[in-house]
Length: 172
Image (tube, rainbow, N blue to C red; front, side):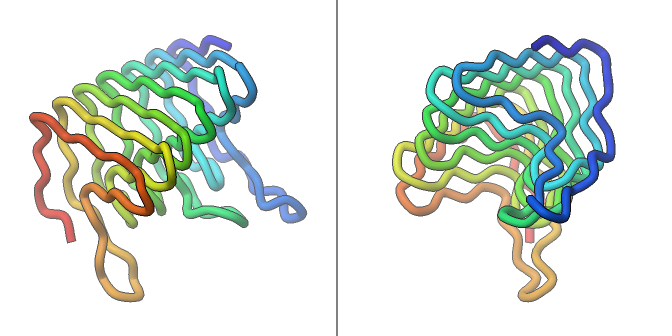
């Protein structure tokens, strides 16, 4: 699937399933976004999962992702041996993390920006998860209402995180 200069907005969360993703790519799918906007989608702006699944994003904005039944409202999540590559893109105003690699997922960001996400800018967690960011910035993580904390970048539960030439500023 290739999406160029298009928008996916305001997918509604199904009450029975708790799902309302902007894009879901599974089991060997290939997704390319160039100049796309994903805004106001439920649970994930984009979920990429399964061995051989690949997502490539450039000049793409993902924002205002809201929580669903099983997760936080993540802009982009890559998991279960999938691969994501992001260049010159922005993740902003998501309720969860801007971009996340979870168990077995590998995510690479270059010259991209994460701003005003509530839980954090980027996160890598779970066995085999790997997130690397080269260039760009992570700014103004808002923080969770319960305790007022948010993080610019988070590695947890065995996840690997690498930041090179990334500006982190004004995170809670």
